[in-house]
Image (spheres, rainbow, N blue to C red):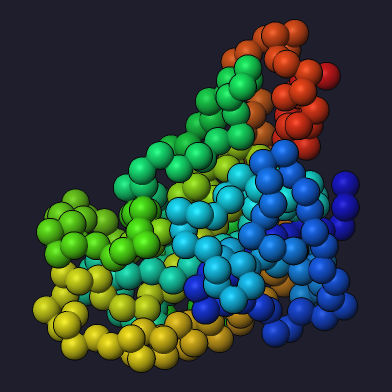
Amino acid sequence: MTDIRIGIIGGSGLYDMAELTDREERRVSTPFGDPSGPYVIGTLRGRRVAFLARHGAGHRYIPTELNYRANIFGFKTLGVEFILSASAVGSLQERYVPQHLVIPDQFFDRTKGRVSTFFGNGLVAHVAFAHPVCRRLGEVAYEACRTAGATVHRGGTYVCMEGPQFSTLAESKLYRSWGMDVIGMTNLQEAKLAREAEICYATIALVTDYDCWHPEHDSVTVDMIVANLVANARTAQQVIAESVAHLPFERTCECADALAHAIITRPEAVPEQVKRDLAPIVGRYLR
């Protein structure tokens, strides 16, 4: 076990952590290919953390192109047990105003065939996912938002759409009628894979704009959205740093043992190469 127990994923606008000291870049190879870039290892509020820019240096990857498996597997090999993810989102409800923060506790999938499991190729597992966000880690993030002075909302559903285009007006109105809260393009796959890797996961959703349902949507300019991204990134850095100061905690949540009763395949039937490839995840269950 390493001393790097906390992982941070930075989304649109959040490509670095200003407070991070004692930095080093670490490239990680995985059975699933390369992560979005090197992990930046450093010290934040006295804790060793690993930071990854989700979309790569210079924001090069659209959500569909992201290698979600490599990103999460890389965190696992570093010893990470907690992932805080920061993501830009659109608001589907009037009460979520641009520059507000939301700590969602549910996801709804509108992606189209993205790979979102480590399993297959002779090894079958079905993890429980009714509660996709670690409740305790979500509470830490929520309290950190309040400490940072941000306007924050606890709970809600994040619609994960394919992109890279934004919603049509018909889609946006439908999501609102379903009672969805915010919409983004990246977090569901991260949450699923983190659960399979037995990593606690929570999202800090940073509202940049109202989705196209809003009657004033057409008056929103790119400059306004970019300004909200910049402001959100500053807030996110404060929130993440404050969250890290209250980590780690004793993991008694379902995340910590998500695979305990999830692996269906008999150990002797699992291909040896699959066992080797997934050893960081399944090693303690498949001896």
